[in-house]
Length: 376
Image 1 (tube, rainbow, N blue to C red):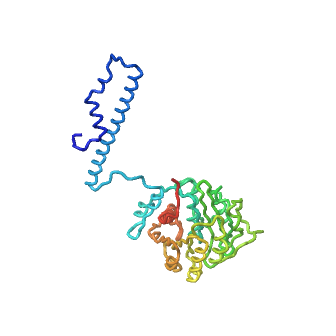
Image 2 (image 1 turned 135 degrees about the horizontal axis):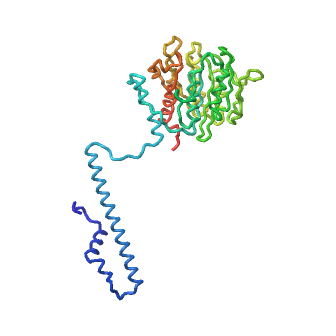
Image 3 (image 1 turned 90 degrees about the vertical axis):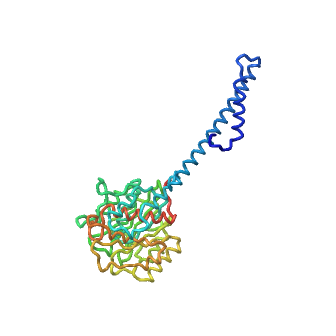
């Protein structure tokens, strides 16, 4: 107590007892009954322990306050609670990339070690630029939080002309098994008019659901699915066009009203992009307005993804900034213009880890709006 602080009244009692020589209350030769001596000894020992604990707590409090004041003086903090896992996801991708000058600088700021989301329910709709992003996120969710990497024995490769489309569908579906049981997929050669590629992914442990719906420019969306049963996860890899009933041939707005809004359980997010098609109906303002309104009517959050930047820009790469103004969330991926040639599989597609970076950006953005949950 050399610092002159006020003494606790209980500590004064302790000192008084000490000054009166507590131990003298216990003479070796006592005529008191043994049971009474034991009771008195027990009370005294309990009192000593309690008062010693109080003394220790007060000393610790003074020491902590002293350390805290010292750190505050040096403009530092002593301790703060560990960040919540949701916070770590929010901070996984830079909020502002406008001042980042190179791909290497951006890559160094991305945290690939993010927590597993749960209760995720996203529909992706678009062309191949969106397909590979879906496959990358599905891989991450099916591998308990491991991103696709080129140095892994098993990883996705951008399909080249040597592999048939139906082989590609089969291989990618098997890689995501047993979580992607539904692949309404069929395509032959370069014929896009009859192509179908609609995938449904469900990972039950964390209740994560992804859907990919293929849409080529002005060409209608095609599906053989009865949308009311795709959540039942029946075994349905379709790659033979014979004897397949096409249940849906829809444009952008019809696919939302008649398909997306009828998926059970209803999706939380609709992430869409139309790619690099010059004949795309999505350039029409009326279509854009109807898409956002239809999604709003069935309580699905619209997320418009700007088109990733090709290695060599093309005239048909329309800029649709007005869509960003209409959608609930503008998912601006203009940073893909920083991607170096060695990370391009071709002019418009990427190699790892670009699609993983796109997905970390997406999840980070959704977490920032607190509409995304993660495992604790």
